[in-house]
Image 1 (cartoon, rainbow, N blue to C red):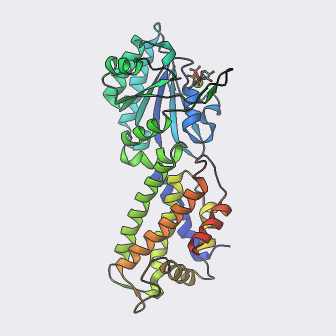
Image 2 (cartoon, rainbow, N blue to C red; image 1 turned 90 degrees about the horizontal axis):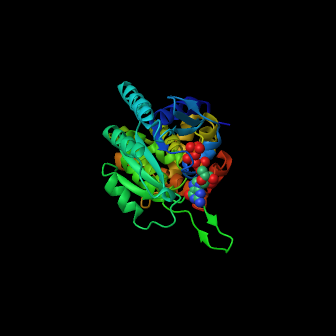
Image 3 (tube, helix red, strand yellow; image 1 turned 90 degrees about the vertical axis):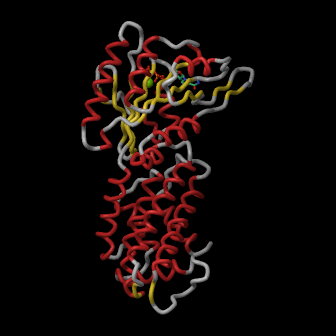
Length: 359
Ligand SMILES: Nc1nc2c(ncn2[C@@H]2O[C@H](COP(=O)(O)OP(=O)(O)OP(=O)(O)O)[C@@H](O)[C@H]2O)c(=O)[nH]1
Ligand SMILES: [Mg+2]
């Protein structure tokens, strides 16, 4: 189904996109029952917290992961008075050990410390934990099950000044017998703040793993398009003959994989091949290159068809951008009602083809 000449291109694009996206590591700490698992399921794809107990990394910390979702959650308990010192110490040791490792995807990137609003107080274990964590990584305090603040958030901010911010969250909708309802709140703020706090090289992973904000996925996808357009422009720094337009096809394929990765779609060879096969039509790779380039050119106002039989840098940048934006627009439409949805490659390919055809 795929042009033989494109198979390696797709393989490389998939590997590169996954490598670049990497993984984000989040420490999620709080006393038993504050709502950590509920928060995890509300923020991330794939009902992560239901994937079992997780792998123990310290006595009180377990690593929760799921295949295909680029996040590890380090679920930490044991903040009760009797044992918090041991918990804080072993967590500190763990963070420091990981920091020594060379690969950024092994480091801890951000921490969320959960305190239930019901408790109405901040305990010594929580104070010590925030002190320790904020000395190493950006730390956010999350007030969980938030329904009636009554000055609690301000108090928490005063007691824990090293926290980057304090965010009140209600992770699930709650309906009372009298019909009164408390809606979900605070998740978007938490996601947006965390996005600012994680290192640049982890932002795509975080955008991909979360399901709260489609805007964050779109924003990161725009950065993929911008980077790809720059590469395509450089490739055509000297105008390239139309017959060599195939030269920029790997950039386009890489961009499709990169955008898919930022959206959190299952970036596999099969997935990207399906997309490429339906958009890059033709029998031989070179023909495919020409076909795609000429169909892309139609997307750029004022270009229409090729002038002088060459593609200049400006055209190359413009068509890469148009192609990338068309793909982002397609994904946006498919996911706008529910960013946690996972459309099939066929559904995406169909919608993308329609979009490229101007429908
Ligand atoms: N009303 C309301 N209940 C919540 C909210 N978040 C969690 N809960 C409830 O609080 C209880 C405990 O939530 P969990 O998410 O299991 O808490 P946890 O921190 O993971 O607990 P451990 O894993 O035992 O440490 C559950 O019954 C949840 O349904 C919330 O935002 N609002
Ligand atoms: Mg739990």
